Length: 140
Image (cartoon, rainbow, N blue to C red; front, top):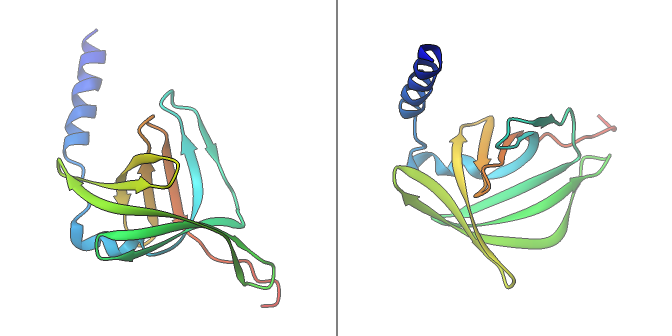
């Protein structure tokens, strides 16, 4: 029992010491990101070794768009033409992406953001870990 209490204490302590994303760093979201791993609340995870699909984020101050893209073998990028608009919200020492489309509204939490890694958590506590996307180009 003591071991469980100690483990929970350490987990809470480490979680409370984690660095929040500074609003000044939000520009790092711009660009192409590919899913590297998906983790469920139950701890199950699936890793993606390589992927020709990615998400493209483009910010304009505290508003942005997100669209799905596919890398072609010649290095070019094709979009599916659909965009999801979002607004960045700074709330309770965390940053959130608030989406609204013609059909739905939802929010995702930005858990981590740096030059090479992006972690987004959904309201169902599904954690998406992204890495910077590098298009495939067989001509190089």
